[in-house]
Length: 115
Image (cartoon, rainbow, N blue to C red; front, side, top):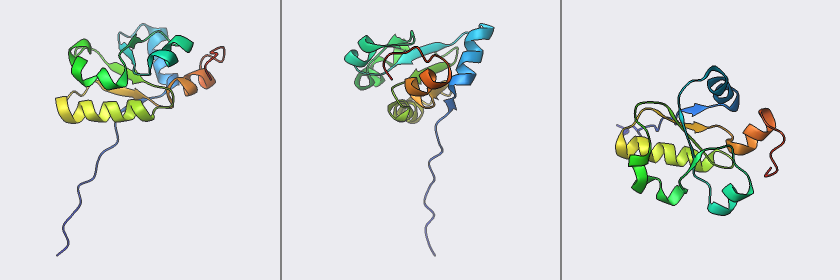
């Protein structure tokens, strides 16, 4: 008899278009930018900056009463952070911005200079 391998469910994501809709309709959420200092200095979309390496030790800075959207450059780092938060802290209000700031720039704000 073959043992079953547990599957890892994908993290919750929000698209740039969905995030823009939240902004336009005034939905309350928290935006966290986990990129490195030099990336944030180059360009940003207004999120609270908590570098990726510091997120888990600063979990108390993430709101639990509203959705929290975590973003990075491409969505890979934010996906990993969202997964870690879900596994370690069992929070269910955390989303990764799919495609990160790059997709935000392509779909929503093509004036960003960091792309």
